[in-house]
Image (cartoon, rainbow, N blue to C red):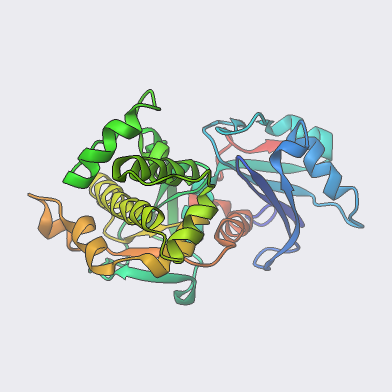
Length: 334
């Protein structure tokens, strides 16, 4: 480490099951500069993908902080929804990085909570947040992720989870009608199987089957567009999606006692904001008998900026100790 930070310039990357976004941070505290967005399936390895971009630069980055949508094991990681495997020392040797770090993508989002500004979020439930309370970030995308940020005395700890693989069941009459239709195509109904891009499509298919409507072959983006246009099946699917997301967010807020607030991240939810029933979301999010008094303290926000992961990675690169990531068991060197 140099003066408590990574050697800059630093490559930061937001690596999901579908796309990989690369940016460069020239100096500690500087804004990230986007370099490229690469479909994950276009290259056999992350090294090949990174080199296809880095080979075009006049000045190569000296370090890398990489956010991976999957579980980590020290200096290695595996994408959950794609074939890329990450080995930190191998990447450093192949691409000439002096040092680096792998983090879970939601660890990076949790770190971003320390640097995001008021204009970067939209509040759905005001709650009564505590300034030093635990903050939780969660959200649907290709999969579903969640992580917490615990801050004490200027230092923080990031807590990644695999909350997307928690099982989930029906809690109201509408869900009770949909669940058998959903279960027919799934070995197990989990949070991720419903609160994700594929999950929105599954909900749309189940709604169409339950109501006798003809279901078109659609993507998650199509369902969103149809719902915004007033299509009945798509609109019902999005309403179910919002209610389920609010319920899961409230449950995880209780599990972590997230008195600093809950933040929804990912590319799906901001597009669905025009269809958010704030009153209904508030009722489901805080309706946690016998813990209503605690649940009423939780705030719920949507992160609306599209570069939260990169901003979290830049903050980690500038001061890894701030997030408890100055960990010899996780740092890697060429």
